[in-house]
Image 1: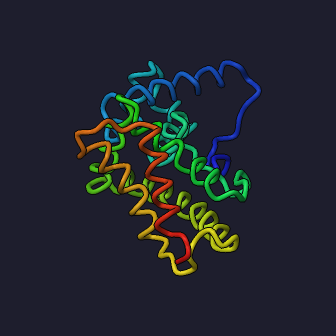
Image 2 (image 1 turned 90 degrees about the vertical axis):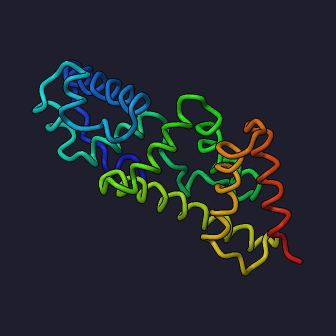
Length: 199
């Protein structure tokens, strides 16, 4: 997902821009503290000390508001045009934000909350699916480039590859007694490349 596709048009009025910033900061605080279920127009308006109408004017749907809040926390996915064509570098680039979020004491619980809420809240599920689709699209480009350069075998199943890579991160962060950090993530990515190399 390119972040500008859903962005509300900017205005030259600095007061309006300050209001937008204040609303998103309040929404970000709510998201980190209470999870995605807290992101409603009413809750955000109260937290930002603005009217509900102001929030609706900038983000007409809850999905717009939730997406903008997640984007503000640095969750904008890597785009295809940012890729270097170097397998290991691109895997690092693609996984970097996930790894940083999982290693962060505040953001990691938010990820768990988001996954859990997506099972019950269609709006959260829609935003989650949008980010997964964006990740999968770019990941597919990385895998295809690795196949073309002969670094990866040609029969890689994309869904299982993502599950293996990201699933390893999630297991290490939430189910393993060992510390999850960038060094561990690097080893997982190295294993991924090695295990998927042509035989």
